[in-house]
Length: 394
Figure 1 (cartoon, rainbow, N blue to C red):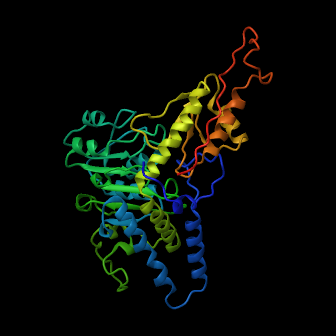
Figure 2 (figure 1 turned 120 degrees about the vertical axis):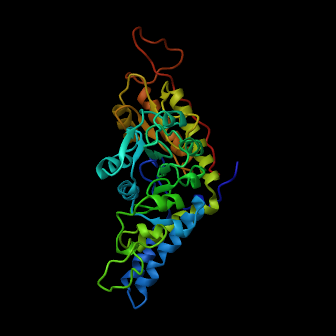
């Protein structure tokens, strides 16, 4: 297994028990420092300050392009995933196939925009077989999450590309980019927010577009910064400029761009493969704890990413979530399950804190009982969660 460099791991300081990266990834020291540096630079504004700060955009686009196998002409920055999906939804014509079980950021745009008709897939994993059953000449695009936010199912992007043929493949990559090694170049549109697994903070993200997407999707939501000769103010409306730059609506925060670039520049030398393998290892540790407590892992276990959802018998998810929070474990609690999502920086101490919380939760109301003490008739005692050996971070 490739080793994560210490220069990557020392960048993070989330507290033990933080297991909620699928919701938000605490930024690194480098991201915080760069954001502070750029903000301080802006407070001493001089003749060249704005131009200097605006160069952070190209820096961020360049590293994003390298990580997704594209180039800067095909990448534009975004403040979040939803903005990019709305832009695309207003530009697609025909019918778009999408699952109603997608995260709402990938359903609302298609309905609200009203330009493309929606062909709803059956709920569940978006597999080539499911998609193939709805394809017709009217379907012009498929919109799918690279990783499902509930189950952690990792879509087979290459197989989906093969089954849809020349149709547009639109991918919401926020739950996978930077931590799963995918053939991102098969996507015609890849939209990614930086506040989760990339740990870049809010208001960061990008959209990468193929030549096919640039040819077929109309940039309806394109502003003055997406126009040709954007800096020429001659009292006229200019045509949309070439490439992904034509999808720019307005100037974004150069401070956010610098933070985003810094976050991506940490991922690049560490490698997505090494980060992803460490995350999977931590998911295995957490799954072992769940099963030892008599629980059930209800998330994807084959085509998986960094999401692990579980249930405990006879205990509502809210009760489990409250117990975890009381023990200092941060997780996402949904009506049907509790969702854990560790990162490469998650330590064995975090796993043990989670295990201790489940031990306390499964302990009989009368207190601990030795293995030789017979159980009181009519009572049920949950299995004891074993202590896990500590594993040093690598």
